[in-house]
Length: 241
Image (cartoon, rainbow, N blue to C red; front, side):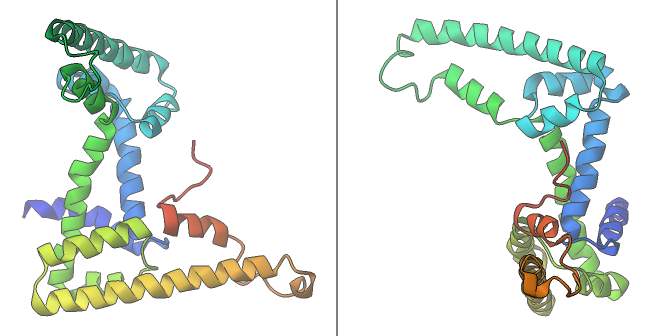
C-alpha cells in the first residue's frame, strides 16, 4: 500500500535513543524540507509560485539563510517581493476606494486580511505539515499491525509535551475499543515515567553543584538540561541556529 513509504522514517525514529521520537521524525523532515527549498527545486516554476505566495516564517527563513546559497535565496526573495508588492498595491487601491480603511476598525479590510495571511504562512511549514500528518497516521497504522513496532513503541523514551498532545488527540480518531485503550494506557505511562526520569536527572544535576555531592557520580545528569528542553519545547539541538 502507498502508506508503506512512510513506515521507514517512523520506524527509524522509534529506533533512535531520543527523548521524543516524534521530534526526531519532525526534525528530519524539517531538515529535508529546508535542503529541498534551497536545492535545484527553487528554480522550478511550481515551487517558486508557492514560495512567492507563502514566504517563510521567522524560524525557517533563518534556516534557509544558513544553507549558504545566497544567489538562490536572492532569487527566491526577489520574486517573493515582486508578488507581495503587486498584491499589496492592488489591495491598497481597493481599501482606499472603499472609504473605510481609516475608520475605527480595519476588520474585514482585504489588505489587512492579506497581510495577516502572509505573515502567518510559510512554504516550509506547509511542506512539513503535509507529510508529518502522514507520519502520525503511520504510527497508528503500525500500532494496529502489532508485532515489532508495537514493542518498539513501548520501549521508547516517551514524548515531548506537544507530541504527547498530538498522540492523545489523534488516537480516538484512528483507533477503536481495545486498541485505543491499550495505546492510551501505554502512551500515558510512557509520558509520565519518562518525564519523571528526566526530572530526577535534573534534580541530580542540581545536587552536583552542592559540595556535599562533588565526589558522587554524575549518573545520567550531565545532559539533563538539554534533554529537558526536548521534553518541554520539542527542541533536539539547543545550539542550532
